[in-house]
Length: 159
Ligand SMILES: [Zn+2]
Figure 1 (tube, rainbow, N blue to C red):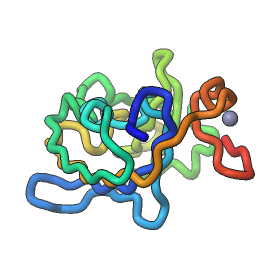
Figure 2: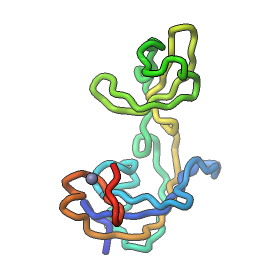
Figure 3: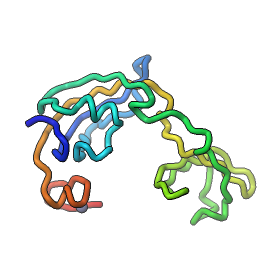
Figure 4: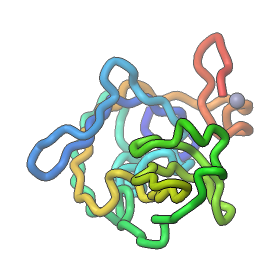
């Protein structure tokens, strides 16, 4: 079976910088996702379209096809009191929040008294990256998976 929209695809992957530095990989846990739903970087999703099960790909992607360019407007100053647990706020903390009607991950950059500077840019923004992918499985998505927009693991249903 080949990779197409609305197929459930399972991959092993590694993301590397130009100089070969490994930034992230799937290690012992392959990633399963529904193709065409925007889970993967846009350029990677394009490169995988039509690929056969079992295939290994290596794709170099510019930032705009990977995790985007850094946007200064995603660096914001907020109040420590806005956090659920103000005492736990410290540099490096990563949290998921909706600001300006968009859910994204933010990283705390600095904390000074009540002022907390957060950055909503992806940690790999602005990077040209090489994605190495091996396709482990391609299968039809169930009607329920398509309805939910995500993969259900065999035997259990977790969100
Ligand atoms: Zn579900």
